[in-house]
Image 1 (tube, rainbow, N blue to C red):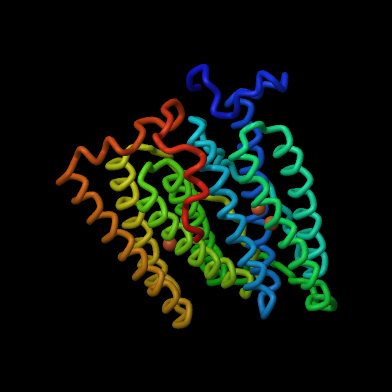
Image 2 (tube, rainbow, N blue to C red; image 1 turned 90 degrees about the vertical axis):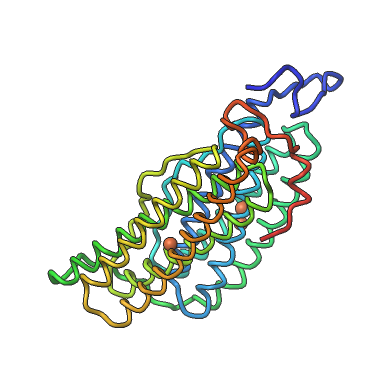
Length: 327
Ligand SMILES: [Fe+2]
Ligand SMILES: [Fe+2]
Ligand SMILES: [Fe+2]
């Protein structure tokens, strides 16, 4: 990876030299911690629901931004963002959930502090400072939730209890898998495209897909089923026209899937939700079709994307992270 000059810091005077590779390894580890936190908190938000659920979900969205910051830092160091989905805690008792979340935040603060102290690059240290501060804030936020969830009964999951429910669970699981894969695909794209504005637009898509996944998962929980949270296979690309073509193909696939579910399951409320999601997917398809058409009109813009982020450094520096607007 990369050349001899290490973006991770020139610290021969200090006697400890950390290579870009080693820094990427730490960042990749921390991406996995964020990924785990996202899954754990989304699951928690759906299980708890009510007034507290959205507040837990907003922490999951913060973790998505942390995941993105680590992913961007890796891409800028010429490494591969770690998209692997880790195992996460599937707790069903609201009090136990909130306590586990507090423990996860404490653990993140502990690990990130260690990593911040190991990494010589002052810009990456600052990134850690910012994330650590937010994790401490999350810990306090979860602390304040404890009295609100105390005494709330645990959620109970069961297997499908009728052929109709079996169909329902299967449909919802297909939707969750598709949406989860879309989130990963769009987040990865938001790390590797060199154009920050495009990156933010694609990140917005990921947030739409996160809402879709949430609606499907909440519906499954309300029907007594446990959301599995296994993403459909994702293909990661760094080439713009390939990215747009792939997105169009998958968005069209999602539209077909939602139509098939609308036609295959009789439930007016759920059919309305599916139709609403399908409408949003159509909008996504449209947007990517326009972007692809623009790109085909100005093919030189292709060069704005590194052909392979695993061995080419984008032109921007890690410092550009701090200039990016917050989602
Ligand atoms: Fe985080
Ligand atoms: Fe956090
Ligand atoms: Fe979606």
